[in-house]
Image 1 (cartoon, rainbow, N blue to C red):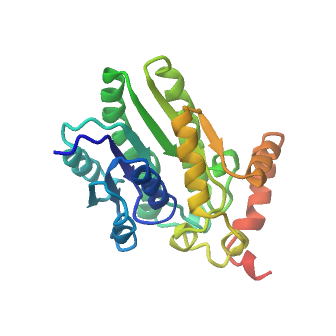
Image 2: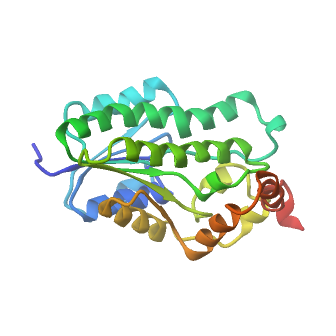
Image 3: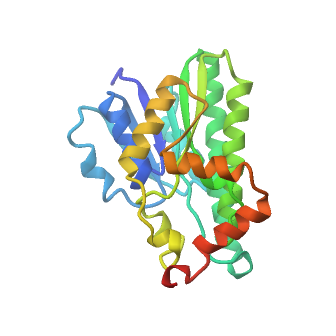
Length: 259
């Protein structure tokens, strides 16, 4: 049986999650990768690394899906947990089907916490481990036409900092990666293709992932990728929620990309 350290990465079938999993493989970690979509793109991506990769397709918005992943991990110590699973949802809240916005909340928040709690408990008991949680700069903005998504990321950004403080001096650190708009399947899946933000130039997921991975290794509480995103967060901190909501409308309102 492999004695290499183990990294668990969720939302790893594409985008930032796939790139984070590759960062782990480059550093010699065996991998357990999970996602709610097939690993078509991810499979060949790990062939060049001399590590063991196990993949599982599971709906991490559900208790059952989270337990499927925990069962696969079994009793093996997790050295790095990358809680990256999450997705967005465009359009106005009143136009969204209940099941759709509930799935966003359950994936981004409930499933994430159901996974983090038992794994981090074991890390703290061992006195070592690192956690990287994918939040977003969206958590700093009232997200008109992405209201549920931005709200969920506000929770994750806050939760990550709070958990990191609660377990300080335990030997375990929690880092929150806060990307801005990144070139992934996120915008298409969220039905934001016809919006300004959906059509804008976006960050390279490999660069975003590297920044997050390095910050995690350093034990930093959070990292915002890119100067533009840092400036946007700084500016948002000086505005009211009503103002950021108005600005967000211009970027995410359906059809705004055609103007």
